Amino acid sequence: MFTFLKAQAASIIASVADWLITVSLVQLTGTTPALVSLASVEGAVSGGIINFIIIRSWVFNEGRKKKHVQVMRYVLVWTGSALLNASGMYLVTYFTTIDVKISKILVSVLVGVSYNYFLQKRFVFK
View 1 (tube, one colour):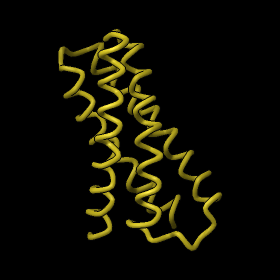
View 2 (cartoon, helix red, strand yellow; view 1 turned 30 degrees about the horizontal axis):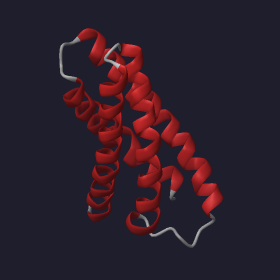
View 3 (cartoon, one colour; view 1 turned 180 degrees about the vertical axis):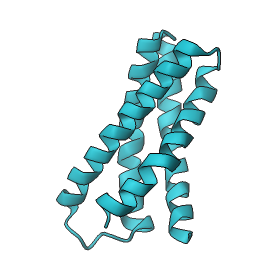
């Protein structure tokens, strides 16, 4: 349970960076569903890098294993996460009137808890 909580703390840090970048880009480029999705991917890239660094060393203590294998596995999981986040943002933006800032948080939490943690634990850092 402690590992899960540490992973969620790392995720919050990465998500704050992701959210700030996504919202900033939406403010600069516009709120069409396509632009929101692209901004979401840009935020996810930044958040993904931050998250990998934190979870590798602090959450799963896997600094002794080969980094390049972990990076390749992480990129696979992250790609799925980015696609789920971008798709979720597109759907929420297209089908609802929920503010982009709130929808980003909702989609990120859903993907983070239901997808990211389990694959990171069982695949990336096993």
